[in-house]
Length: 445
Ligand SMILES: Cc1cc2nc3c(=O)[nH]c(=O)nc-3n(C[C@H](O)[C@H](O)[C@H](O)COP(=O)(O)OP(=O)(O)OC[C@H]3O[C@@H](n4cnc5c(N)ncnc54)[C@H](O)[C@@H]3O)c2cc1C
Ligand SMILES: NC(=O)c1ccc[n+]([C@@H]2O[C@H](COP(=O)([O-])OP(=O)(O)OC[C@H]3O[C@@H](n4cnc5c(N)ncnc54)[C@H](O)[C@@H]3O)[C@@H](O)[C@H]2O)c1
Image 1 (tube, protein in one colour):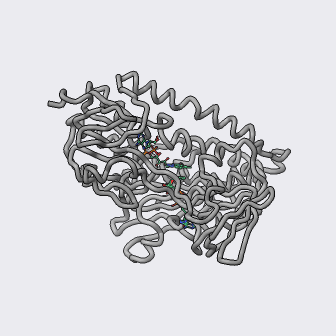
Image 2 (cartoon, protein in one colour):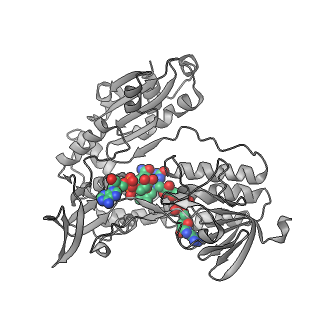
Image 3 (cartoon, protein in one colour):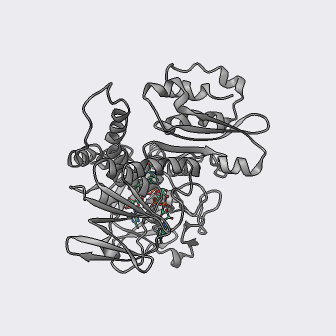
């Protein structure tokens, strides 16, 4: 029956919500098409994770050199132009590489903008493509504040493509992108001001650790303006003036709007087909089916409680692959999903949070001040704490860390949390020594 269509499965969008599942699916012999209007690979490789972490690498080195001052001599200064050029050396080949992987298993890459025409047809710039199953994996786009002068603001992609670092950068918003880019821009020599409409920064992270990151950035010259409702951005001679709270203003040579991202649901034909969605994305059931049962959604475009991150998108596209290949018809069951903000130091977390553990009173909470630890003394880490949460059976159920290697520490703990390994089972592990894994596992009580 499926042969009456051009494809068994047709994906709209080519990001991680698609390709991690589409490639193994096509290698099982399924006929797969992928529609993409922009760069192959989507946000993460081209204007997200891979790009950002390349720009961040010298920041890490600068922080380490600063701490080891005297042992190593000669300060570090970051050359923005070279750093940006290096980022392109790393990421520019990724679309071709990912397209190559898709072509190697005979996936048809269809360049153009996809719009659903009926349950089995997507129009790509006027040409119909039909499929038994369709996956909407269109991701998100940057939110833009609705204030006069918003056309004078920029987004995260434009930041990463700046050929010259602006002198004074104002960042509106205080989430992931704001704090990561404030860290990078400040380390490269820009004067950075972060403006937030609330009284908190990085609301999704443990606030005592966030306070340490903010205090460190402040000590490096980053300014924070709280409770600031931006009302207008205005061009003034060579600069821009950001007006807020009616009568206050701050001057900038460049303004970054980092107030979040919205799902790409408009113009897709969802209303015509009766596919349900809201401002957080497309509604799906526990099989990632939309309200039209042969049309699925994957990745950031889904309305979900799970964090909208690359590993979540990979998990979903892989889940769909197993469903479409006929390996499983079980509902999706997400593991504990970690998250990290790549400031310097980083804050990473997984599972039960310190706040939830304290509120509930049902957990044992262990805290460690990491600069006391011999391994962290090697690199003279000054800022470092973690909170480990155990349930009544003394199984590790949550961990949050602030440190230079928080992402690696939390990654090390994932198997313990997801598979509920006991202290005895963990004690059987022989880890490489010295290493962050040995150090982190060694802290478990
Ligand atoms: C600056 C930044 C930094 C980030 N850093 C991290 C990080 O460090 N770690 C992490 O885990 N996550 C990070 N993320 C989030 C991560 O990039 C996303 O979670 C991930 O890319 C989601 O994948 P996706 O396939 O759902 O969407 P996307 O990668 O956005 O892919 C969607 C694709 O669909 C295409 N498309 C949209 N509409 C159509 C249409 N109608 N027709 C055809 N094509 C269409 C788009 O062009 C796009 O290529 C970051 C995001 C940003 C913006
Ligand atoms: N390290 C990572 O994994 C990473 C890094 C960057 C981005 N991301 C992904 O990209 C998404 C988008 O990042 P983001 O930083 O843009 O979003 P975010 O949701 O993390 O932060 C948005 C910020 O904008 C503020 N804001 C919202 N509306 C506002 C308004 N009207 N006026 C002023 N401030 C306002 C919020 O209070 C918040 O501080 C993240 O949620 C995440 O999924 C992940």
